[in-house]
Length: 357
Image (tube, rainbow, N blue to C red; front, side, top):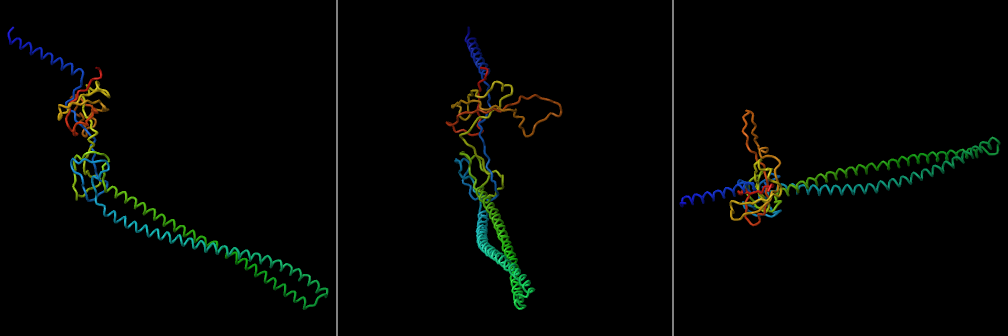
């Protein structure tokens, strides 16, 4: 056998072995060459409008949770807070004055009512006593009339007794009038309590105004907190979209950041191969940036719909011409990236072990 034939035979054997290995590999693994590293990209925006007073971070800045990202000028709000605090002090002073007025009037009115009640009781008692005297005097006068008819008393004595009865009757009527007057004065003093009700209503109005201003104060304090934008996570600033001194509007994107410790791989698997995958399927990972540092991972999530269903501009088929296109399903791969400086968007290649092996 010539050397040429030996070389050809050797090449054929090597090619056969390579083809067999490739076929075996393809039968055991799902290969994906266009997967990318992904992260939750957080877009930071302002809730309030204003001028950027301080922008302490820049692209690539490492930050911790609660670190300040942006400070927006808040001098106008501080001025408004000063005005509200002055209004609160004025209202509290007015509330204290009305309280003092209420207490003074309450004491005065209660003292007047007690005095009028005592006067009314005394007038009633005097009226009852005068009534008794008047009743006795009338009896004596009736007896005097009988004695006069019998000539047992003189005309002068009778006239004196008649004069006494008339005086007692006048005194009784005066006592009755005094009792009526005392009762009216008591009712009038009791009605003075409505003045206290008016003061109570004034106190309620002042308290409502104070609560309203306190609510405004809390809202402004909350707005001051919104003027200092802090990070909710530890991470790295990916890109900034504004500078110190610029004016920003509510909802305007100022910067983006992500947590480099929470990365995953986003892959799009053909619908014809999705049947071979399940959660926790083993994955071999090769990163284009670090080809000599292979990683291991597992399938963490399998999408519930094809990516075409999330397109902003769906492509309907009104003409009736149909070209069948293999759809893709999003799959997330979880892996440990603590040893490598990985960035979102980096390309990776995946070998996912099929479940039927």
